[in-house]
Length: 68
View: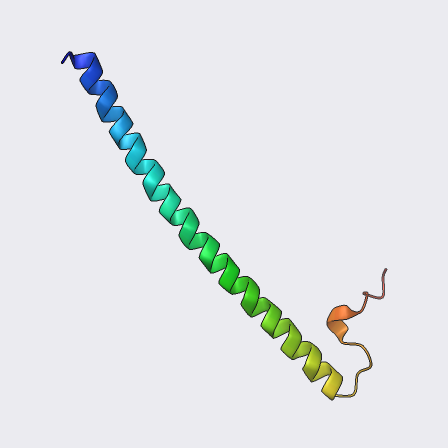
């Protein structure tokens, strides 16, 4: 095998490994974002319920700011 082919095969192997590593990172981040999104929604709902229980008519999270 000539040197050029060997160099190209090494480059492809390194690039393949890099793509696999990045794919794992993206998959992990996707799962974390989904988990954080669920948590934010839970916190938003809990806060809306707390505001409603405190006597508010419309949860503040659902109200427009006064400058709108």
